[in-house]
Length: 65
Image 1: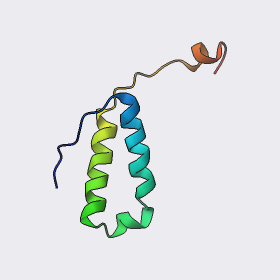
Image 2: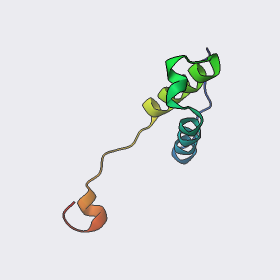
Image 3: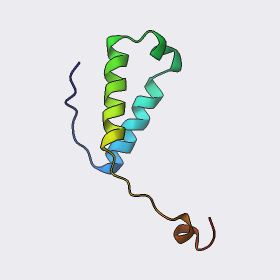
Image 4: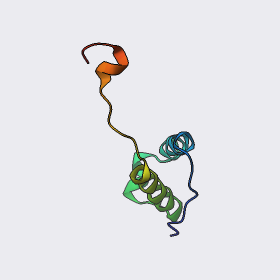
């Protein structure tokens, strides 16, 4: 399993995470193929690399969240 994945900007990363999540079915995790293991490794790597700062929802909606 190769843990070297292409670096992407935040929008590409989120899009790739969604693609991977759509490809993996819950039953695939029970007895994963090497492809599923690779997708899971990439998914976890990408999620860990996300640098999203928490934000206050009240500033987004202009009031109480």
